[in-house]
Length: 457
Image (cartoon, rainbow, N blue to C red; front, side, top):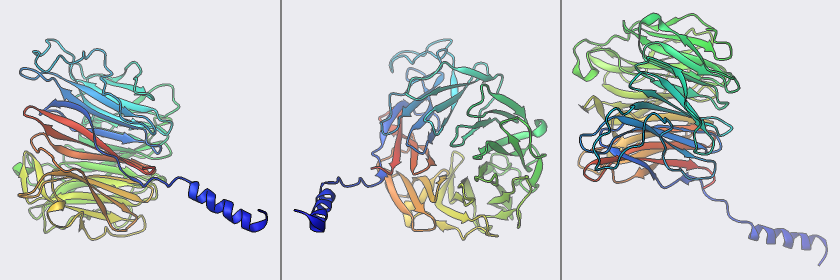
């Protein structure tokens, strides 16, 4: 057979023989570890190739509980999560579930995670006994020897790592620890002049960190630092002096603003979000920040309606400057966590206003307990929440949206025991994303679980 007809037949045969491409989907959730029902929230991170790291504090299973120890589970590219490990040799392995607590155990907590483009995962934790901040890394699931980054800290509140692997960590006392991916050592700096009450940080693609914090007077402030040199690029700038809330509101833990979030884009621009009280109601507020730390017009704006009560929120910013904020509209409250429908608002870098808030899901499916979690990568936005409808089954859900298209909602865990649940966390890089959460198991315990959005199916 010769000529074009033979070429057509061969092409058709090749097409028939080619395997079908797997559809992108959320992987079935996997159990990462089990703790008692007073374990911590979970931290998750993923890189553009799908390497991921999850971390949490696992309390001792045994009579009367005991000190906790951080645990980290690593997922290699195109692989599965391995067995969770404790990378701190001074925090001995747990005894069996029926054994008594071990006296003199080193206690570790505040597990934080990051994964760089080259697949190197960074684990950070705090030792409760002496306040030492420690880190270890892995590309295989076997961690390096721990390195101490700081001492005598009371918290390690936020970690952010860009795709290149530049990392920054802030605590509630105004202390920053940072490292460029190729730098031989870590650096540190102080910010806030001893008046920091809560802080957050975001690292842009150029290795510059935007730090946002609430001071002890309730004012929102920002400052940028070059992680290559350790030099602050801008002075401390006041974003808003209106963050103080009504004193005495038990739902707001004494009346001070709760929560601050920050994100950055590829050009060093940022978004800062927080919550304050206006006319007797809690409102999510936000501002876009230029690379020099000054506010972009129109300055500070309310994102949630002042006629409703906003609960906890989360904020994220994509490399192109689009930003998303999601929050729980508070109808009721339990143990400091708001319960009500989840709303989402989006703003582009050229818009002068945030979009009209819209529910993440219709009806009972969109009712959440605790704050939602938001992540953005490329043109995709992810929002994860713990669905808690009245009279219905509790579940872990995630919404995924490309640009401003419709939300595609997925139930990741359809049978959640609310005794051990904490709100889920989502992270995204490139075409991959990960959601981690905790749910009750049996009569005593809670399990940490995760699911990955895998574009390769």
